[in-house]
Length: 303
Ligand SMILES: Nc1ncnc2c1ncn2[C@@H]1O[C@H](COP(=O)(O)OP(=O)(O)OP(=O)(O)O)[C@@H](O)[C@H]1O
Image (tube, rainbow, N blue to C red; front, side):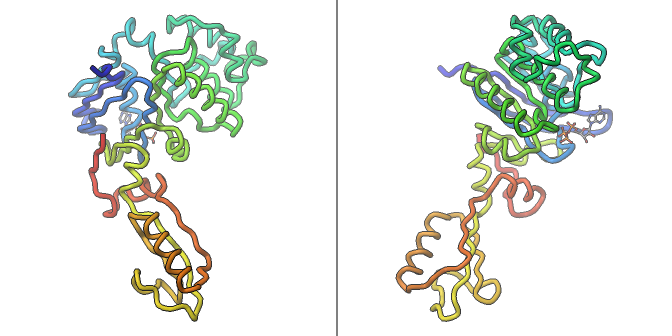
């Protein structure tokens, strides 16, 4: 029998007054997964995270974290580390006091020194949080989320405002926690981070899923492209229609490897040199840009 999911969301509706922010959004996150909730601005990502965090009740539907209601502070919140999109740090506390306080509230055990070293803020332990730079505040938020190595970590746009070294350090820490079995839910607008790190993605638009699945499930919904130009004396290309302009081709294909092989074999057989040849798989950015356009069959929901 498989282990029960860490998160189960069956959110029929989440309303702010008359405004319908989230509708018919169901998903599960399995133990040890990194699940990225991506989407357009205002799609409902933070609102959904707030339901998982126990900060907000869905207007109808239900959410379960570790099999329990996420508002169950004693049993659920102590197992969950949260990095909000907006820093929740008390400005008049020092950095070390902030981590100590968060640690106390979480009920988890850890060393303040260890956690500050992890985010390279040990030298700022006595500094008031209000005096930290934007990136340092974000690192302090992250320190608070990973204090006591929680089993579930919620990261709402964790790397916004971080320099590249801090981003790398943050992802290294997340990776170590995952190796110890942690489950991670992430929102980010840095699609390359999700493409590199997410096991599964829920791509939201206007309050519901546009697509859900692995990176390759999502990128398979759009064609890849092959571009090249033929020399003027080359024979006509049998397998594709007329070139875009002059002798330049831009081919869209759902069978990149097969079509590229056919093209190269044809060029070899006819001693044709292809110039400006490039072959690019579909990227998550392309899928994201196609939201709202006719090109993606929507909704395509892959478990
Ligand atoms: N407290 C609130 N009262 C009224 N409307 C709200 C409230 N919080 C969020 N909304 C609205 O609900 C929608 C979803 O907001 P949410 O913050 O969940 O989006 P998001 O996907 O996280 O967006 P972003 O990528 O811009 O951070 C938006 O249209 C937002 O204006």
